Image 1 (cartoon, rainbow, N blue to C red):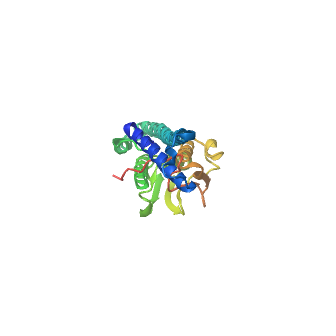
Image 2: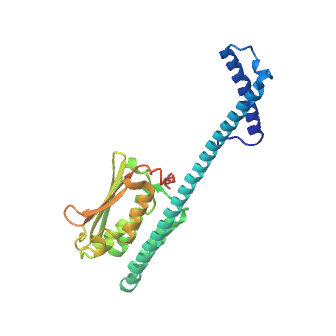
Image 3: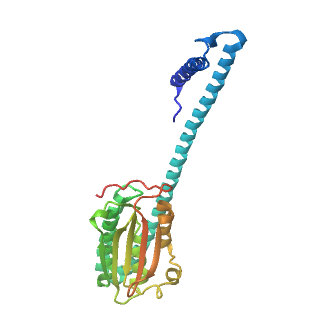
Length: 296
């Protein structure tokens, strides 16, 4: 706060009143041509009038600076409360996404246990490794884009155990973008959506490609697949780009980056679907995400 506390406050007020009283009257006497220290003359209540003006001005100045300091303090509290609310919201969205992914994986694992036990064991080992990496670190609201791509590679390897050669993927991340902070689990719901609605309905499977690039002050991430496409996908996906995972991604983007962030779905260049994320390289002032933790 701008306003001091305790004895400092009393000393500051006393010094200000004394200095202002003496200096102001000396300047006034010099300006009007009155004798030096003429304000000390009691005749005509000069001293009483001068003291009254000084006290009124002092009270006004004290109230102004006290109000200014209190306003700054309250504004800081509001900003902290807004950041805390944003952090709590992001943590809630992340905790909703993780069980969603885990339940889908366990459902697939249950099928494999009956049809192909060796692949089920391999998938369980991958899941164990994936969860160890994912849950071993403390929860953060942001991590480097490189860590997000590494996490995505782990998830795709996990899905490759189940789908075999039907799933192929490529991840393209320029070195200069690896340290850009992004919310965790930002891309996984998009990949999960591509596998579930694009590649799985296709007998021969397909390929998923994830690319990141910079356009001015925006980070652009494109995820394309060679699946069945929007027209053949489930109604909830093809009609309005909905679905649990996609809505969570949109909500998290808006919470962190504001109205400049966007997620769009469009048909692929030849086949399949293309999902494009665009958001500022820096989080918006209304929804600041903390700095990313270093890549392990």
